[in-house]
Image 1 (cartoon, rainbow, N blue to C red):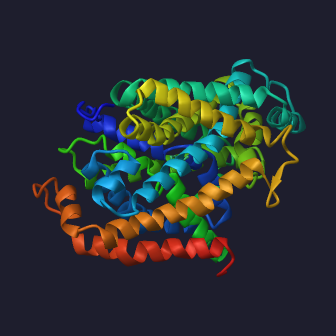
Image 2 (image 1 turned 180 degrees about the vertical axis):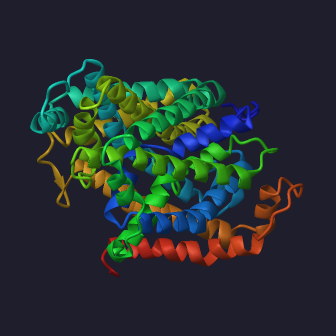
Amino acid sequence: MKKDQARIGFKSNLGAIAALAGSAVGLGNIWKFPYIAGTNGGGAFLLVYIFFILLIGFPVMLAEFTLGRRSQQNAFGTFRFLAPGTKWFLFGALSIIAATLILSFYGTVSGWTLEYVWLSLTNSFEGTNAQEVNAIYTDFISHPYKALLWHIGFMAITAGIIMGGVQKGIERYSKIMMPLLFIIIIALCINSMSLPGSTQGLKFLFFPEFSKLTANGILAALGQAFFSLSLGMGTLLTYASYISKRDNLMNISLKVITTDTLVAVLAGIAILPAVFSFGIDPQAGPGLVFITLPQVFQQLPLGELWAVSFFILLTFAGLTSAISMLEVPVAYLVEEKNMKRTTATGLLATVITIIGGFNTLSFGPLRNVQILGMNIFDACDYLCSNILLPIGGILICVFAGWYLDKAIILHEMSNEGSLKIRFFKVYILILKYIAPACILLIFLNIFGVIK
Ligand code: PFF
């Protein structure tokens, strides 16, 4: 975009919420949340998770919103604009790298979801037993090129939406996909709860077993809150730069947080009762979705329909998150390097698809390539989720809580004084001390400094 061109933002408040919630709601909510909640004390984990979402997730999200909307620029430009003549722009650069890298492995799993839509459409699970469904999964992820083709396909769709721009791409498709996602997940919940023995699954998810909640479980809740809300890597900051100056940031953050948490809980209700009802191990992790659910679906009346709906839901969830990640580097190239949106998107999607190709193939032909004892996919996930993300979170808190003039924050949050902001001092206190201290704690735990 040329500097003298008007910057296009979200057209409506609803569109902004759909896009932001679309970024937050993703694979993290649908496959990860139900299973980690269940294994870490169910309702007890849920309580801790909600506590972190409110105490840390909410203030950090609001800080990202405030910075992005204030600057009306990409992640790099935001820090250069708000902290001129300092090295803070490097943080913007770090966010761009983090978003790029996360997309490279997120695109791998999202590509798998497309294969599963296809397998469900072609009724490939009919008549298969547990072993065969397992073999379908392992053969697929280790295949020399099948997963790669789906990865390329998924990245092409992501790029296509981003090329459409903020209103005609991101906002339009999020507004279609998010309500559909809700409808599918609620239908799945109703179905799941009507199965015999479903109460056991609900108990696994909601009954608070404080004895099962360990220190690691508490830290897992904090990590999950960060990943699930898409915090700490410039994504929300970039999207927030498209929010209208009339919109109420506090209100939007609360809506995004509520939607994200609601979808995580609904995903638990949709998946766990079915898993229990069919006597499947709820701790199967990533395989829970890809290995166990096809077995569950084929035993249901209209099983293919449920399977197709579920995997489409998962693809939508992945897609609305993936576009938010791709937008971070695209906005940078368009605004800082004056590149055309289509060129920037094409270029970045190609680079990310190539990096992601290594991630995708790390379950097959490249399985022997090890980095610090991990395959490429796990190493990339580890670097992003455990290192770049917590660093990003702390830096956001330090920047907004310590560096930036509080008057600027208040001015932006209150829409130039027209909204009344309660508890501003408490908010700053959390940003300054509580949130960074908690994040530091996860970080130290990950590196084994504290247990
Ligand atoms: N919040 C997404 C999920 O729960 O799947 C993941 C995500 C999206 C992480 C966007 C980071 C990001 F920038």
